[in-house]
Image 1 (cartoon, helix red, strand yellow):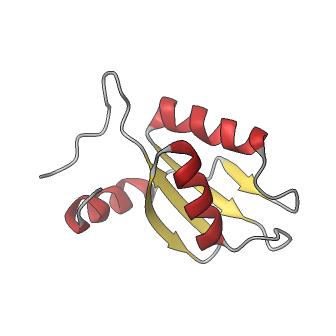
Image 2: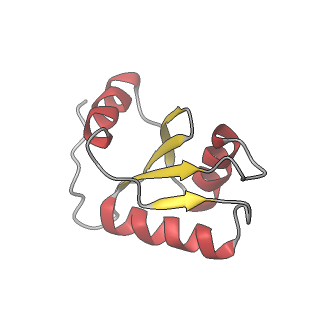
Image 3: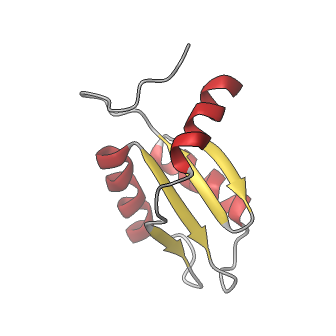
Amino acid sequence: MITSKQRAYLRGLANPIDTILQIGKGGIGNNLTKQVDDALTARELVKLRCLETADITPREAAGVLARACGAEIVQVIGTRLVLYRSAPKDPQIVLPR
C-alpha cells in the first residue's frame, strides 16, 4: 500500500509520460492483462486510456488490472489511469518515505 505522499510523487512522474495502452470495446482480456504486466515489469509506472467504446469504466478497469497484475492504482482522471508496481529486481523509481 502506498501513502498519499508517495501517490503524489508518482502522479508527478506520470504526468509527462505517454499513454502506452488502450482499453477498447474488447474490454480487459488475457492479452491486455499480459501487456500491462509486461509494461509494469519494464517501466514500473504505466499510463493507460479507456476508450469511450469500452464496456467498462476507467475506475473499474484500474481495479481489475491492479488486482490482476499486483499493482497499485496511482490515479484515475477522466479516461486516463495510471498504475504502479515496483520492480522486484533493481527498481528504477525510489518512493519517498
